[in-house]
Length: 375
Image (tube, rainbow, N blue to C red; front, side):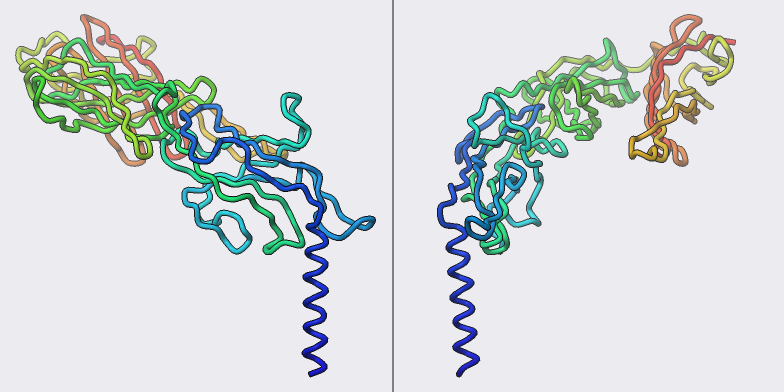
């Protein structure tokens, strides 16, 4: 009985101390965005604003431990579930922005801001959940958190765009070069090229193209070969972003029947210097064989002692063992040869040829324009 009374007394004292530590603290509040707000995706990230006044972390005056801006934080998650520390469940986190340590002169003294911009999630439409929190040693789980708020990201009105570029002519059954471009698209995402006959047919996916987005300009580009049977088509690019779909304007493309290959291209072709580009064209002008295209690649190396990344530039050869030529002398080929991931395209016109090649080999990646003449 004595032990039980002592234990209950200690618990009561602990609860009393916790209550006293929290008494008089100004609250932590989530301010922006408002709960349920609809926001356009933004390359610069999504601003989270919250109150961050000076407060008591533990103890009582005059022996209290105080907390400031560095003791606050925010968390963003894909679901509203909360863990036993009062914060959003960690398994659903997609961003944990850093604390706002420096006061911005456009904010009141007791307000902080941070930006949700990790791993390009801020470019993906959908519903997200967030809250602000601060360290509180007298609180369950050592944190005090605001109620969970939600916001929805949408591509509508955000400047996100998608476009497709097609050749002037294409030939039935022969791959042709296509390009997609856009703005503020997730780097590494796949754009689907779709085509339909006439104006009322069903859209069918022709090929997927991977886009790369420049972090500074937010301009997105991607290239790849496509192939269609002879006929008249509408062609568009489509990309799924979260729970929304971005579609480019459709363009018309006439795919002609392949016939009458010129034979003047037959023979061996090399770069004028004779070093980095070499391929042969069959006697009937229909096939490129034994292609080897020099590519300037960037290869990551071990980081410097201070942790800074470093790279070396290497000239590597991209193999194109066999590619079908179109009657106008153009070709587009993508494939994997050993560990080489290659995409090459170009066109022979008269006694000269030119195009571009991309190569991925291990961690090395790059692209180069090429030129060749008949030998």
